[in-house]
Image (cartoon, rainbow, N blue to C red; front, side, top):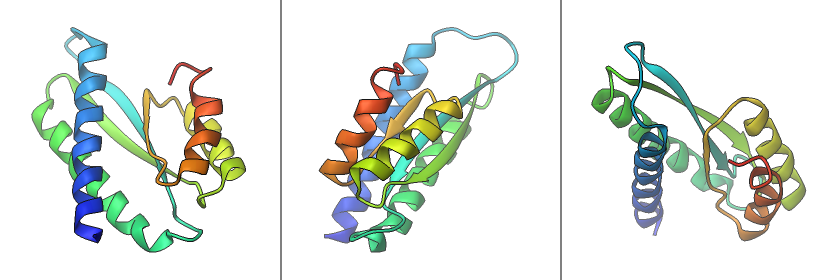
Length: 124
């Protein structure tokens, strides 16, 4: 089950990266910095899965940076949800304030609801 979750996160993060790249369009000569947020359950009831989520997201970021070396530089910013709606909302706000273009996660439905309440109005 853990491998299945990791694979889903890798695929989701790569697809998210592709979406971000396609949204940005043509760029200038200097690589454009793109921050992507990851809402991960670093604490809480499924914290044991957080390292796998982070590893998968970092693999995706590395792949994006390798593939788009001339036009983009991707950076991953991880924030803890604790699988908690309130904590996830606060973490989503931190990511938005950090300038992320997209957010992957959260792993828990309640945390996702808290994050969406912040991220959607911010256009992330």
